[in-house]
Image (cartoon, rainbow, N blue to C red; front, side, top):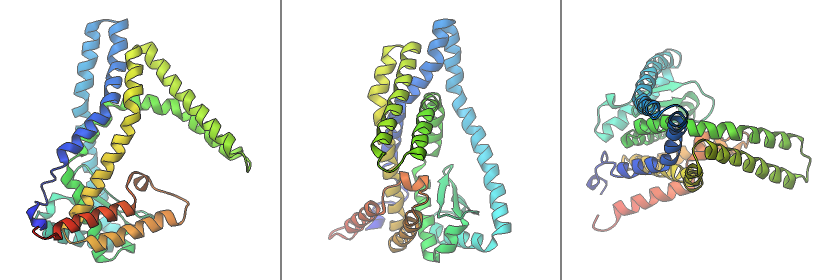
Length: 317
């Protein structure tokens, strides 16, 4: 039965954190080396040590400032939402009240608010803030809204925001270097796409491959000149797997959040809400939001929910 597996245990949390750390390790090592290596080589080893200490200590400071800014934003946006969208705000607060009651947690565990938005959107950040767009509130029934809130509460149980923000900060230098290198190639592909005629898809594909290879080669040459061949080997061996691991971890987190909603009795309504979300976002073909690109498809999510329910209702469970 569901009660045999404590709802708040989230036993996979350590494994997910380990995957996130392993996936981020190559970028973190290269970012730190790009800061410390040139300083140690061209100035002095002690200067490199100072830079390393400052870099390591900057993470908690940046995290603290980010959290303080997020708390101020959460407080102000909640007040604005309550004043400008009182009906929608009352609906999401009622939904959270029932979810918290079913989970057996205080309502102060998470804060929830409504923001302006014309697309289907619900998000969780800083481990305790839930944000839902006004459009989402308007298109869902009360039970469907509770299912979405229960899903976001599942993300709260994963407690991954602090680690994710720290790792993002420490890997920022190398990731930024990659973005700056690939930005010209993206612009080139867009320009080719804008000027291409029917039947020139092959030319566009070749142009994209050439631009991608050129940007990647520029990154590798820069790493070789600044750090040496070991950095090139680390980038070639670790970076291609980084995106795969991060993507898989994102899927696991979604499956777990879905399972929390199912455990609370919202399986049917979560299916209905996810179907509405996918229909709205994919049906028009004009815009696919980033959250839908990073999430598993509804077929996978429904299959995972069915599997969890079968385990709970199996004989002897």
